[in-house]
Length: 291
Ligand code: SAH
Image 1 (tube, rainbow, N blue to C red):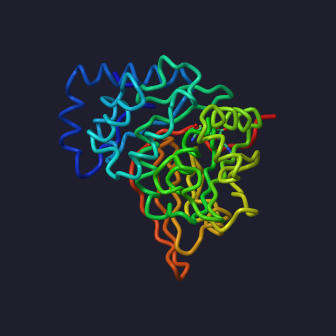
Image 2 (cartoon, rainbow, N blue to C red):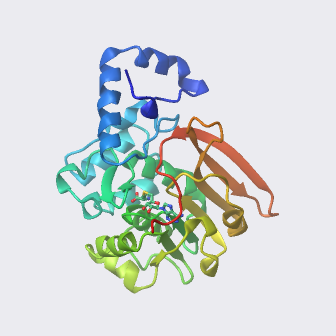
């Protein structure tokens, strides 16, 4: 049996293939183990939806380069810019245990938080990519380890790890409501030369605050990434999205079953909102700060 928390969400295009796979006992065993490991490491985020497909679990590598190359070979990374931006960030700098840093799975980072699975980070970058230009302002809500904030900064800098690639005004803000995680993210980013440069040049700021309110001081944002499951498409976040702009946000359905879906929300140049429900996921919730 697969624990219900970790079941796959078949989507229309691949429901048949998924059903076949689900009938395979080895596949069941694999997802049971992945589910159990994720449950033990603190409930968290990996995709069960269409984009990442069932190829995600095959992407684990022995090195950062191998992990990224496997994500690309599986079609989870499709754009050269995302490939370069993720290659420019060593995931071992953001994971507590270097032995599991190149696994395509979430890892506990303490305080009930996790660094998301690499296939989920790839998916977010691919989705936000059209809005990650050299003058973009980006908000990463629930920045946790700081890994994705660094990758997003590389993307804004032109898909390289060159902190000077971006223009004046370009900025990525990571916000988390747990101060020790804000400190952790800053320390993690300081482990690499280009990470230190991004911090020193003010291309990246890590802020402590309630991400459900966004961060009006830095708005409007070309792109907003939300790294924890929201109860709704918070109106403050929609207000802080630029026209045009895009938000990538996991939202928990109100069905009572805990189902979560990624919503991609676009604001067009006239301010009109278009929402698309894309894939089933499992994220930790966007909550009140612990007391
Ligand atoms: N993108 C991060 C994911 C971290 S897990 C990474 O890959 O490392 C989700 C994060 O959301 C946790 O760090 C948690 O502290 C944060 N979080 C939860 N509720 C929040 C809120 N209301 N405001 C800001 N951060 C929040």
